[in-house]
Amino acid sequence: MRVLFVEDNRMNRRVIAEMLRAGGVEMDEAEDGPSGLAMIDANAYDLVLMDLRMPGMDGLTAIREIRTRTDAKARLPVIVVTADSGTTLEADCQAAGADDVIRKPVDLSTLFTTIGDLIARRGEGGLVLS
Image 1 (cartoon, rainbow, N blue to C red):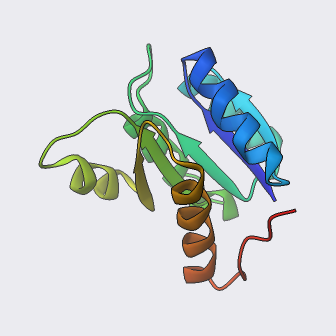
Image 2 (tube, one colour):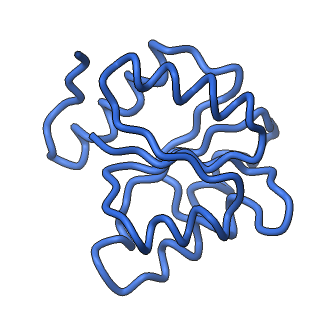
């Protein structure tokens, strides 16, 4: 499985990338929305993890941009990873096209369960941890 994590905070990227790599996931990282979109255009990913609060282009805008694609990348699964809270957070993320939301600090078990559930819902089988 190949995952792109779009997050402006280098430490957050490092921690989550290490967690996923330890589970056998191939990880790429982008520090902002435009870089993430360029990586999506240039590579094949199974899943995107997207922070919401980033300078320049926020995560919801980046997700909306992904959903405007005319190829298969338009349905690329996206999980929001955020420290944000609020009564409309999940509805806002869903309206933008996100598939799920995970709150920081991220728990490894929750992360893998959410990824596995999303992939199972899409009929692609479960996530296999190495």
